[in-house]
Length: 333
Image (cartoon, rainbow, N blue to C red; front, side):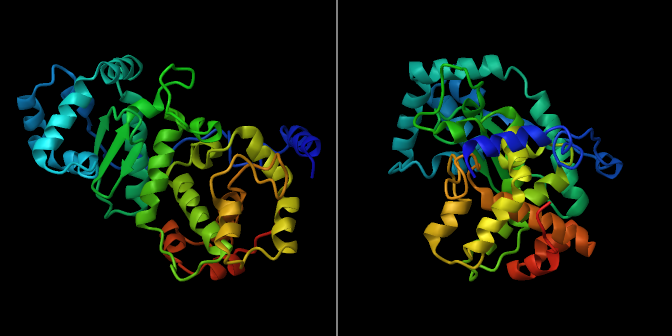
């Protein structure tokens, strides 16, 4: 399918298809989510490491916040603690880093919106997984070294990555199709998708394209279940027109996978071609967004849960990708 046809189809269905799409629908969080008590504390580490930093203050901060210090600095290749302290002092006193910090302070004067969205996200996870332990949340200015760290007990947000798209400070050598996802709208959905890996049971011996599609499909399904009011584009990282275009051409996209017998292909280059980061999936169309296999996997997992009346936990526990596909009854819309 050529560029013109793909784009035109998206426009023709944009009005009639919105009611069927998962995006942009009026939505309120389930009352069962909102009834779960939740208070998230965000510790702003950038203030501690950039404001009037001295060696004594640096040592104090490293010792007071050992969890943060470990995940943030232990993998930076320092030979010993003395070298680490010396280098960190130089980094955070650097005029360029100081300027970046000041800009972050201006654009993120408060984190009330992020805090509220994280609380709603954790409520959603708690509803499905009462045993889920709320991780500690920190922010930092990393000099575009680390965007997000998401572990079971700790989350670190590199706020400099989430400055406005037109800001003069931007990550270096980051492709535009990826850079456009670095904004506050994508932030919490990205964190939730990362957290989903804790619950996403997977058969690691299955190296097929289908298994990779289902893995990502379960991740996105998890995020949408936890954040039901979040538009799809902020979960998968597509633009609205790309989602509309993909739904409009779902039959053609699916036909490409079937005709080329791709589902059970184990060639890592083929797997990456359809699920790895890319600006588009040229094998289908120059207008087909990249990672289209992940999007298809999401639709398959949605159908699997709906057609089998399963809970989110049951979906995430199923590690057999072929079983999910076979029982999904998936057909293009």
